Length: 405
Image (spheres, rainbow, N blue to C red):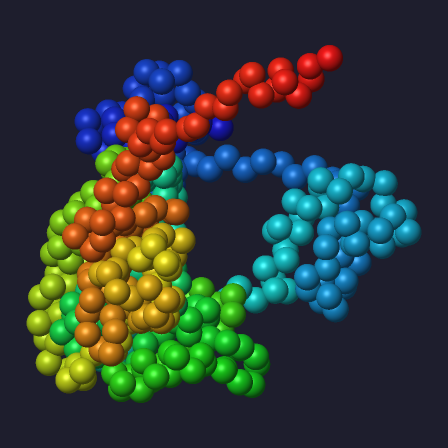
């Protein structure tokens, strides 16, 4: 049997070069009948392996019967049944056969491609970056908050060191402000700030999240657990962020991630979409007109706690001590914090605003608040500056008189 290369050469010499069949056979060292068959066949020759009998052949009807009743029955369990019927082969042959025929009995899931109307939907999720970045106290984990619009595929990415509820609301609010409006429906993968409990018959949303969705006027939708296809619009961008942005880049610190990330997202939204063949930023101009209007008063995303001022003039927030002006020792003050500042307030007015520190167990001091800074710098006092106190020296002859013989 000749191969594909000889088949192609025979046809080239005959049809393109005009050679005689006898000359072709003599040139290639083939029989004349072989040349005739090659010229008569419009398809290249295919190698077919001769099937050999297998010890599994006589048990194949039993295997099919088992799969018809139990399509997902494991190979080990089927092997037990075959052993009882006299099968003496190994499980390897059985596994190979099951890979070939199991799709006949187990339907492969099929999904319909969904096309969204402008402003109809956005999908939201967190994505943890593969590697940490340098931080003031060691390496820090970095999370990406991703929002993707269903129609335009416009992508928003916000960067965070943590994924607390306040971080979720803060980045969600910024995402809606960045896209210039509110989609009619927002889809989530059962995030903790969103869903308290998800059963087959009921989804219980978190009260705080319902306050957020009610203010912005969108309908929340929680994906079915373990159904990643329901949020493919945002799952693919998260993989795109990890593979196209994060991979192969070096970051000095978290601030460098934010800088480089903003530039990359701007470029990503200007790329031509692989399926739509148009830039997301161009489709967004059309979709923006269909988004709901943002509320007049945005959702309050600050972390709010109350702390009592210590005797030395500090309040503690997130393990760090922040100084307050003098005169408030022992009072209970309000602390409002975002990801940039920590404000200490009384009766709705700011007493002081500090730059927030994400390090642990730090003391942040404004020197003008108290003289305590100078006091601490001089304490403990050095021996040479201690005041000299005169001490009376007793007359030792008194003791001699007391013990005289």
